[in-house]
Amino acid sequence: MAEQTISNRALVLSGGGGRGAFQVGVFEYLESIGWKPDIIVGTSIGSMNAAAYAVGGITQLQKMWESIRTGDMHRFFRLKPWNSVFDRAPWKRTLEKYVPEDQLAYIKMPLYMVATDITTGHPAVYTNGEKPAQNKGLYQKVPALTHAHLLASSSIPYVYAPIGIEENEHWDGAVMYNSPLRPAIDADAHEVLMVLLSPYHKLEDNDPRPMVQRSALPPAPRGLIGGIGYVLDLALIGTFENDFEELRKVNRRVRSGQGQHAPDHREVKCAVIAPDEWISPLDIIRYGPKRASELRASGIKAARQTFQRIDRMGWDSLYNIDDEGSDTPDPLTPSS
Image (cartoon, rainbow, N blue to C red; front, side, top):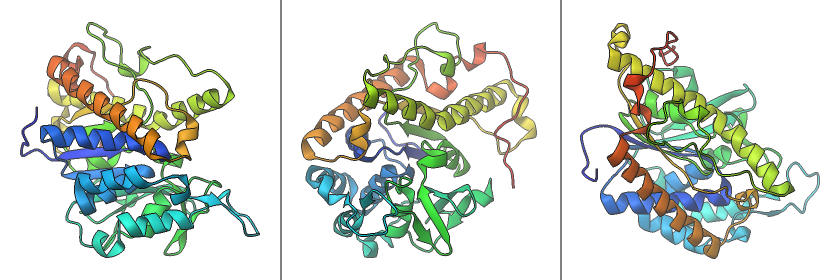
């Protein structure tokens, strides 16, 4: 599993604020086994982690999360009129320290940063890489990614102020696309690791049900805050569940030979890396080395478990597809 192959590998990083330290642990495990992404897709804190990694590798990511605290990311707004709860001036200084724009402009790794264009009401994916031939309207190729793109991707509505890029205002990519599998597929990835920041349905041996119907989720957290976070997590994961099940349908059609009429259809390996337990919604807005260390350890454990599952049962997106009935819809047919 550890050897790099010629396939185009993608790492997809979802949003979740301070929970993003979990993704650092995933990077650390992947580094230890030699699995290196060719492209990274990120939403919100996932975009920041992707940029830090592209600029300085795993060392830069570790240095950033070992240092940042809540005060390095935001502070309560002090000026009127208020248009958000927090002021992000500290976040901008943190970006200048760990992801300098003059270095971000020269990264070689293609990054796809997901934001929500609230002027048009559609997702917007900004990239320094190639603009995919599929779903062209979703992507904006830029000469260089900037802090504005990172801030737009992570601007939680009303928690932070919207970010303007050219003439349009943007909010957090999580508003419409928290776990963006689609850009990885459009960018021609053949092997995808999807890193979620909340638990997901686990594959179980001899369970024929589609993954979205599996019940292997931890119990919902107790209390008001835990309950609100639970509902939020389920809402945010919905887009990924749809994309993932549609990917399995395409894989099934390709495997059965029914996808020959669509030359862009191909078999895509995809596996999910997710925590075992629900992470407090308070961790979205709080940061600190101690909690980051705990989340990193959880990320290492989860990544290890995913690769053990791949060795034992194969990739999540291919699991049991030969035994499932064929589906008539062709949901991932590229559109112009």
